[in-house]
Image 1 (tube, helix red, strand yellow):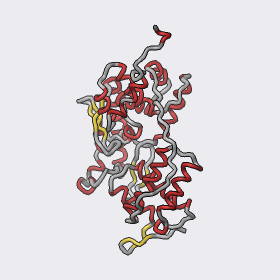
Image 2: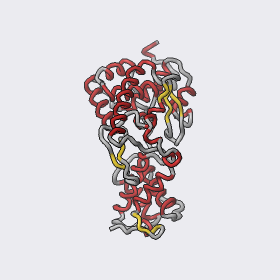
Image 3: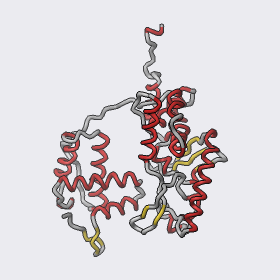
Image 4: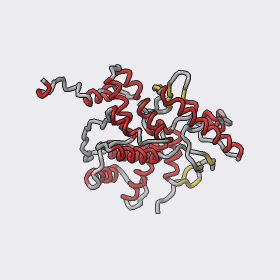
Length: 326
């Protein structure tokens, strides 16, 4: 059994300590889950030997195993390595140094799948309720699914027709467009969320988790409607640290399943997902003549080179005309 570490004269489980440092450093819940999972797998791979008693050779063996035996993608392999290195640097405070002879997974660059405008319309015909509203924001504003589900009510600005994405990829805030066409439906939905919140408050609940140290700075803000998730779950969950019962946002799989079913019903033979609507947002803006740097800002890409991939989707990067079209 994995031994516990002694921290401040108290025994603390290693993975709980990792979780605490991740939250203290403001990592996203998704990154937290990923790092915890890879650290757990690393420990199990090494027969539950405590990581303090392992070194660079053991890390290399595990990372190579992921590439050679499990055939994971390069991004997955890199994520596993980053999770393990985080453990050693931030929790164990142990210098690992450079790890030699890592067998890197082959990085394959794929063009993104994009729906045509006609296909988008067909898919929307088979979406309804909250999934339709969420996908409208992904396609209408270029949001990632996680960014949309993490929206708080206060981040939706109807007066300026914009959405504020907090702590997006790279821990950066940005603005994007709020489609005018879905605002009546979105306002109706938020009214329902408001009524639900009032009921929760009447039952002695209605608090939510706040990012960073805001719960200490503003102790009553967690009950304000503006801080509630725009797409709350039906059930309450319990925060381990505080014991708080609160409504988290709906799970990503709820939207993913709805999109998969809608694509199937529409008869479209593409391997699409909610993220495909973000790709379609960028591509269709380019088709309509929007500036590439404007699209870069809306998407939150750090480099315009990332955004340029959508020019290849449109065949603008090829620069030639097919002889069949002469």
